[in-house]
Length: 202
Image (tube, rainbow, N blue to C red):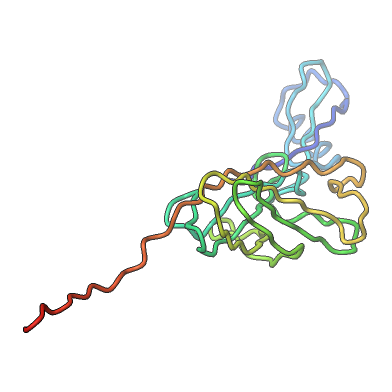
């Protein structure tokens, strides 16, 4: 769901006790000249609240969300099973949106696991698409080699230039992406061969 953001401002219009349709038409013309997408009495005589629609789609990214795909169970991969670390991004209204713009030098993303799971990935990512919203996501391939257990994954998004990554205002630091607890489990046992030695004389 996309929430529409509005800018609100209060303006004063000439007070008129005339409640005739002609007066209302005159007021409507005045409000149309002021612009905006809606208007409401603000509570004070002669004051009108004007609402102007600013955004009809997702806004700029303010937070990244890390998940893992590719396993047979959510949040789980089998040792030696390839998967993907996927980071999607949301705006102030928690709508999924595109990646941060960065400083123009490009973005790099690395994903690592803690000591309970060996996960070493390059500092580059491929850009994928969320299957539900169609918004871009950052994807890094994972190749866990164990040991089994819970591995806390950490994704770090940064400017290629090394400059601090900020939100769209160019000032607010982009927050760290929350870790993801990935469970690594042992794979199925390899199928063995059964052999039977013939008894002597048979």
